[in-house]
Structures are given as structure tokens and as C-alpha cells.
Image 1 (tube, rainbow, N blue to C red):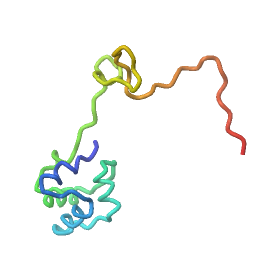
Image 2: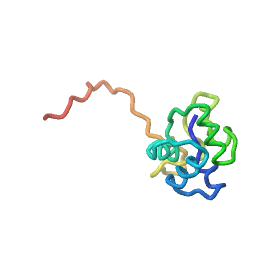
Image 3: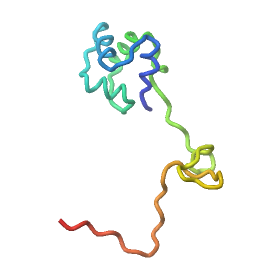
Image 4: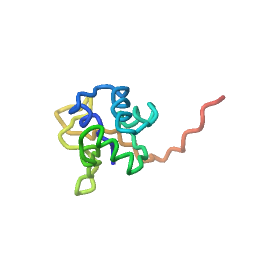
Length: 115
């Protein structure tokens, strides 16, 4: 699960991590600014359950409002995202958004660059 803290903060007219830190401190939750910045950026971090309750109290939201589900893979096992075109795609062809490494073509592995 990823954090989706910005949406809940925007509903309370909070637009910067430092303002979010001040809102957290008003309800007795005192995380470091780096932890708030990680939450703001959507990075996966650990949060205690009682701190999660304080975050919800500060933002006037539910836990479900703070969590964003990860996208499911396609049912047929294909991980390509449909509807998006890769940069430089020709003929309007739909290509995977993420680059896919080529399978080995009989070549040996690359060696490390010289020091």
C-alpha cells in the first residue's frame, strides 16, 4: 500500500509538508520533518497504529482516505498498461510504458568498467 496523504491534506487546505507537520503537532503527533516529507512523497514507511489515528484526527479523515491501493496486474498476466503510448511509438501502436529488458541473445554478460 502507498500513502495518499496529499489528497486528504488538500481537503484541509494544507499544501506543504511543513504545514502538515504543524497540523500533526496540534494533535500530539510529533514526527520528524523527513518522515512527513516521505509521507508527502508517497514513500512506503512504517507508522504505528496510534500515530495513524492521530494523523486521521489531524486531517479529519479515515484510514481508507490515507491509503492508496497498488494497481492490479492485468488478468492475463500481461503487465503492460493499456491505453498509454510509449514515447516515440509509431503507427499509434500501444507499447508498454516501462522499458522491458531484452532476453539474452547469446552474448556474455557485460564486464565492469575499468577503474
